[in-house]
Length: 232
Image (tube, rainbow, N blue to C red; front, top):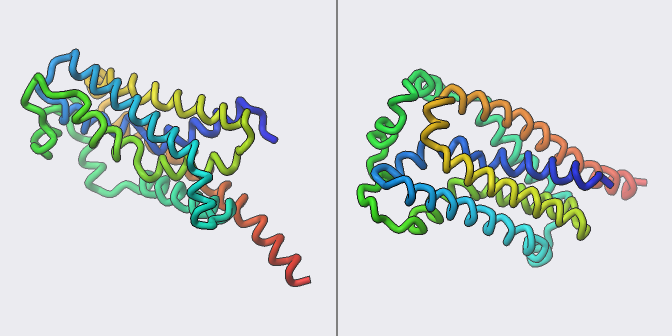
């Protein structure tokens, strides 16, 4: 059995890579365009809390979904590994449009994002923070299908009470990181720019791809053992 700190670290890396709050910075800047700093901080806080709540719900009730549909843990490990690996490959193999996007000046990011998708702009400075923090920021930008899948895979890999506490700790840490990243969205956008976000995403994608491959190996191994025993 893995030590609890390793379980928490593995869970944190897997979930934070799928949540990827740095990738949400351009959308956050665009969607909070025109609001004051206080409302923007509220949006970041509610988005982080909503993301944590959604992932914790699937952590606590993911097993019931497995039992309801008769899904085995190896099957979901393989599927989760495929999703992780495909997500990592999609990030690593960027198309030419992403490369062109990196060449844009970071100082023009806020204006460019608002021009690309004017529907995301919020003109009313008194807008209700919860109305934009939960949807679309928390769901589906942060806690999307990939993050939910990773949580459901992890809860079935590490099912003891102590391990679940480690997973809860990791998810809370992911929510806090998401809040802090969104809270500092504008200075981070100017500091690291598109190129920095792309480099960070690729590094995290490498880790996610390796985790995905390991999940598939762990899922295939018991199936192969059962097949060998059945053939004897």
